[in-house]
Length: 270
Length: 302
Image (cartoon, rainbow over all chains, first blue to last red; front, side, top):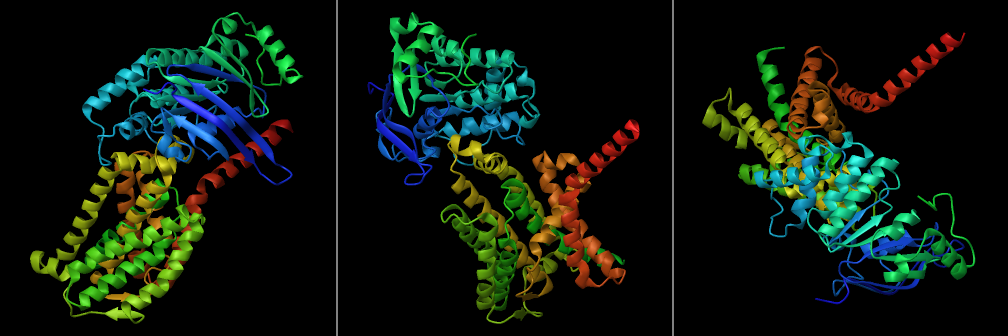
């Protein structure tokens, strides 16, 4: 087994190169995740957090650098190939599910694609359905009795919980969470976050999570990475991270970047 | 309308139903308005006709199906690999097919009044009265069933997801270029099969047969959906059945119009109006509701 599950070696991505709008979204960034790592990522708008995720997921190819996933070079592997082992959730709860298809069909899509033994003409078996029902029951949202309902009828929180289930139905090597609770109401966000925590710990999924909630950035996972202008400006882990308060973190950011970490979306406290 | 006319309308409707099934796949499932349809329908007819003249009607039907798949593949290639917008990709293939179809037939139209066709076989087997009807019903029935079964498989689900939420598919390890290609190949194959069968049914093929076919197919699809109500858009079986039934009803309407001495040439105008009105219906309804609300608000204020 390789030492690192994910290894980013000096990756760079520039948008609109050579134009006035040139933007170095990620610059010479290196990061390594050990198996089972849960890294929270914070940073202001335009810090390059989502670009980092897109680079890892393969939404686009990086301009320079190398990406290794579980020891394999995936730098030039297209998104749909990487998605076989990378689960991803977006801020928009509507993005991860097909609204006109039923809950069962959505789950089947997530399930059948990863079962490499299944032929393209494989269909949902009775045992699969039982498995889906059991998994849905664990969400505690009462969805297990609505397998035949179109997903479009569910609320945003229910859809995001379902997307989470789809992303982890077949345990991914890496889970990317891009502010996946930011568009939900506080109570639902809490619930989805608790579910996330449970699934990630129970299945030892290596995970990266972008968040604007500094409190949860510090309390969730085992490492925190702070980004600014396409680079990592601060990495926290172990006892140093454990002893950090929100105020300490903000102070550390100020010291390193020379300005304050704040914007309208940043949640500075609980 | 005599019984004979009704039977003819049903027979034709069942053949045209395949166009509606093809559009169910490309337009409803993949969410692509595939204009290849017009050219593909004629292509199927041309291929089928050429083989009937050579004395191989069954082979003609099979090859019509294959030729349609090939045409769909070209359109898919233009869209997925060469970055041409879906509508334009369809128009390009359709335009190219105009020449291809003429080349296949060697002349603008082919008649084969005395040759054997799959329908003459069916009539020998089942009698003149029921042969064509049974053959058409069988083909359409089987294809409807196959389509429903296919859309429940993993590949079928991926195809539906591609049309339903494109943002989701790539992140779900589905290659949207692949699913789009499979969908367009199948859709056009079924549409060409329709053209191939119709040519053998009416014993001639003409290079203008497919003109406006996409609009007629969409009209059939929409008529069916109106008849089957809202759930036609939600459940697979109903959606597919609606497409087939809609095509038959459309042919009935055409037969009725002809019986009432409406000029047959204006049927395409009628089809165009049906499609435009049906697709515009939700927008028109919202506009009407808005106007009503505004009027009420004004009255209450005043």
